[in-house]
Length: 284
Length: 250
Image 1 (cartoon, each protein chain N blue to C red):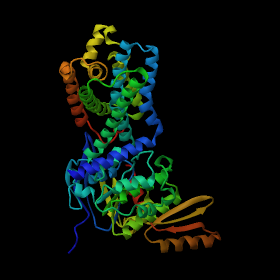
Image 2: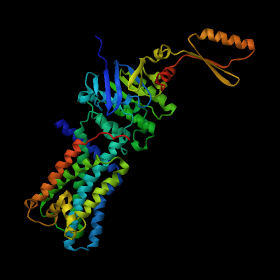
Image 3: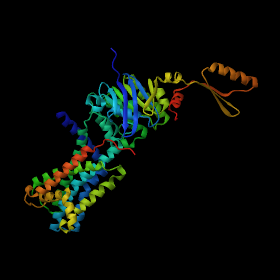
């Protein structure tokens, strides 16, 4: 039997007064999947996720999270979901291990505290007070608090914003390890590489709508974008777009050889998710 | 029910634990009424009548500071920091979380009243409270009243930076006109009328009966009990209706 999706969203709409932040979104997230919502700030990602988390009431549409309607905030749902908000505070005087232990008491079947502290890489800091943690460490504590209840589904709203590159790599490892544990993850991000690295499927969101959806590879190659051939001539970059890079390269190299020149800095790039994203989310 | 009580107890213990973790908070909570008592005790240099005014006055101020002021500050801070929102996303029932915060404030109020009573006895030779029942009833009602009003006021505070200004704009005038530091007989009548409509003056009168002078028991303070009860209902309804788990952006 096919298990039902972890998240099912149909024609979701959310208005704040005049402003329509979410304008008819449909998607579903399968169990065990990392689903990424990628879009610029103000695209409606956080509104969508906060409806799924039970923080906001939707204006219309249907939503099912682990078989529940999150709007009614059922206890049975809150026990099975872990939430990392875009920003949320913690008591500044509390120690890492202490607060994770306290949160463990909210859940029927929590994970082992030290194991979770280790998983997020805070073992060295387990007796540190929250206010003495760096921004990145505090974000890892957020993750620990979201994971301590051993949730089936984890919401990560821009989990690595403000991280340095090394810290992001580490965070990505941790998020991938969630997938290995069979968890479902809904991730929002405005970093393309993050979506590309982590997500099984990506929805590109803008203006409260999903503009494209698919695996990062599908979105990149099949998304209508073309190969890009670039080189430098007379100190100026030259860029060609083509569907047929083989013939174009043949022409370019033949011409260059005929002139007795090099094609400096020659590169052929496959259209990346980035290009599709920028194309889709460009203004105008 | 038993589960809820166990959760509430656990949450309360956590709040107490964190309260003591911050020594400056503990200092302001427990040393401030002592400093006031010492200062005013010195100013009136042991005149019995003046002490009878000041001791209940400072007890009333303590109730207001530990509940009204502390909850308005704390909730604004927790809301702005996103702690409330985080707690809202856990399975901990909201009522239990807020109950833990409230019980924490109530505990501080009880400790401060105990400090005032003990200090009055040790330093100024006041007796034990003559009317324990009246003291307990007024402390309990005062705590309830000012706790709900503190939560209600937190809705009107736009951000944590403005919290001290907003809270003090209410706290200081109310303290001054309600006779914390002097006998209200000397206050102009229009200010007396305002103070009479507010809860602190009645709380102090009730505490006075409980702490220093046996007037005529609870039955002699029916008006005061009513005023406190009405403010409690007003405070509770605003506190519940306006409650927001997250800061409004912008």
